Length: 210
Image (cartoon, rainbow, N blue to C red; front, side, top):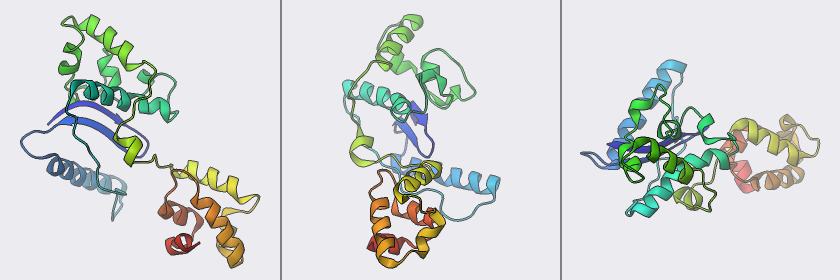
């Protein structure tokens, strides 16, 4: 397959790709299996690694194609992970700007750059102007995938809802008080019940019934 844009976030990755000789589901399954094996061997883990299967949509026109490119790169700004797009090493943005990092062979940039100019220097300048333009772009991620919190973020937001109660004390609270606390925690945007249960040391069922 060809990769036109990519960005590795804290707990997920965005890819804009063109299918190769097999459908995208088969390709993503191959990538997922290979990565799980690599990760498990390196860190000595077992069991599931991914929270959910990948999600995708077809990109069928040039205008939306470029919208997705910019959206993937600007996710870093929306997540407040960087102040400038080219600060982040794990993104295709740097190569489009002319910086060659260790992962430069991953990308197939010619299609997009040639849309801006046959002159590569001018193409990079025009692409950068487009890529950094303020916008209200909305793609699949906005409609279907809420950004999940990493555990450190989740703990801080949970603490803010506890009004002085320690996280370790929640499971020992009287039932009515505990349910009141759990209801507030369930309202935290980007926090899954599975993640909340793990952090609080309670069952997922307990949270879902609160």
